[in-house]
Image 1 (cartoon, rainbow, N blue to C red):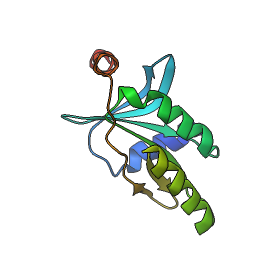
Image 2: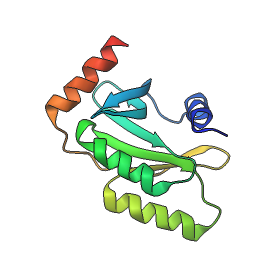
Image 3: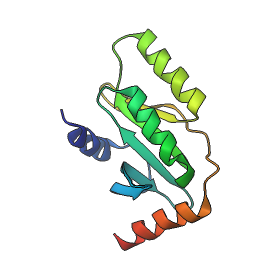
Length: 128
């Protein structure tokens, strides 16, 4: 399964409420998926394997969004799951894992966002 197919599957089976936006630009990067509800926006980075890269990408854009999370397939072992949860928790990044369904394992911490950058993203979303 490709990363794009994984994002599409998430959108079809989503446990989250809000408008979805794909490939949203922020800081010369592209966020895989942004979910916008009435008052908040969350960035979600999808990775099939590389948790370190996913966390790094989420941290880079965190200043732009209310919340940032990563989504990836569920590791095969409890040790693997606990390791990812610990790393995400330390970074304030939410975690969604997929086994047979998508499950929010860890809620993200509310970011202290930069209003100018956040408004820029919101303006881009309104144009779509």
